[in-house]
Length: 166
Image (tube, rainbow, N blue to C red):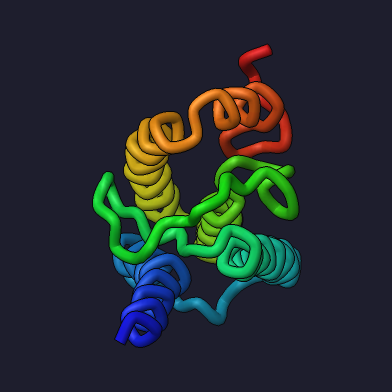
């Protein structure tokens, strides 16, 4: 049963970040014809989508195998067993939140594809909501991992490989 819940969690998360958010961007943009896009935007959007999805999937697989758990914490509520180890290597050496960074990059590809102010507004709202989620998760990580997490924060940026707090 636990495996089933994990699979459902990954599927729902994937649907939300990969399908639902771009769909909301498209709807908010008044459903423009998605086939009438210039080659430059197609290439840029495709590169962003592949990079974003690759980073997210790498992060999920790495956390599952090396962290002995799942990234299934939603606004302070444990949805699935949390990781038992603080992840600081693999994709987590690049960012403290590489799954989310990958999602941001992927959803930025939808903004590039649609090229509307409405899609940009949806993207910004998504980033703000996820930033609130990250801040609540950071409180838990400080509680769970203490100084080890503080050292990691000093070395690695929240979303980028570097931190602005030096």
